[in-house]
Length: 263
Length: 315
Image (cartoon, rainbow over all chains, first blue to last red; front, side):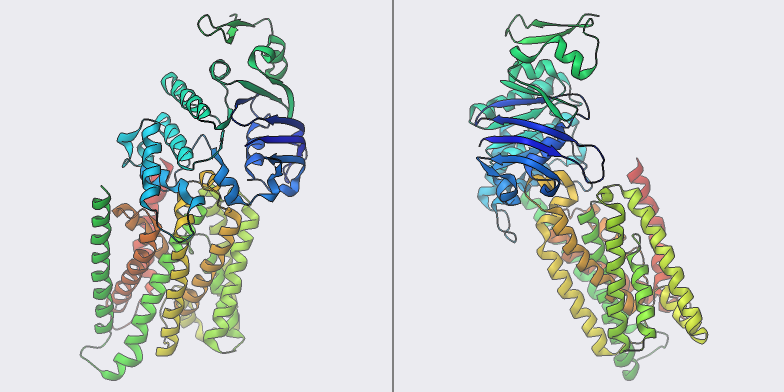
């Protein structure tokens, strides 16, 4: 699945200023992109627009999957191809991990039908894949944030999508889960999934993601590989930090770019 | 583990059926008078028992539906104010003196639906903040209850006591056919709600994750609102404003282990019916020979329960 965005403008109906303006980029099938930028730069809005969650009457420009505009997809069709991982969960009423992962079969089953044995085995293998097999019957409410993040990924895998859009992938996670999440996404990419992940952990994203889109105040500041785009000027411009305070080096082991604080 | 879950669900259902039958039998056999009088039995107790079952079941299912679809554990037709709106509608409708039962019901439906739509517009997407919904619900509820009281006081001062009792939630005299119609309506509405168990399961956990598997939340909520408004309107025009049934029943059942709406909705109906039937018996017996409004009995039990859940939510 290929995502193409051209001249996208979007304004929330209740707000005066545009949340996104003049956005254009495209993501090839099977690539692993990071969407980065400061808080409030429009990352989540962009993801939600791409999933078709926000009413299309407020947008101008084009968002299309496999050159078919997002407005022409039904919600269920989109859900069969694209899984959105919210990055947090409200859990009004808690259910077991297995039942929650099983919910991902919703777009693939009839409205009335009960889950089949196949649905159960898809859900179980997704749970195995992220390495939380012991938690099947645990209630969502009693999981740690890290475990919950893995459950959310398992649910996305059980949705058997071609694209994974991941909001706030590693917020609130300790380093073990941060690495685990990015490794899992890498494994999914190697299976041919297209992945777009929002993360504030630039160094971790630079290790794993092939490319990055930098958003700044609702527009694309630059896009491309981390090696080309990650500069002290960019960080200073979009995050508003003093460029005297930072430097860009290399990870001595993987030779990927790495952001350092000078003090 | 699946087996264990199934056995638990079966046990809960068996207990509920027993409670339901017990409540119904009790309600048929206990009254202001001792002994058996065939006329009293058929003219008063049978319709009243059927009503109690219909209203209790209906309100409990309405509560389950609105809690799940709003993702708000403190929502029920009473706490979000639509029961009071329906009461005002019923009062206005019966003033117009069309066919009492039908006229009051239709205008109650219009009012409760209007209240829900109003809440929806006022709160926009912020249905997810339980405190905001409750705040709006309390205001709406007070406003409509006061309006209904005002209208009744101005229109018919002589009937003040009886109408006020009705507003507190009480089963008035209904014919057997009216009672049966109410029960039939509630059963149909419950089945319709039950058919939506999948999206209810999705929304009761989390909104965004429901959206990501392809649920159109807006369209689904609109459907549920119409259903809930209908159920509330019928219940209120039959029995006045009975609070907290829609809160106590689903929460208790969830606590016992019914997590999926496939089982929770039919269980709510049985539980609500049993609860109201028993409360109504208590309302008849406690102050014999006079009668308490059943809403008073429910509020006495419901208010502490509500506080308990609200406190738990805060933590």
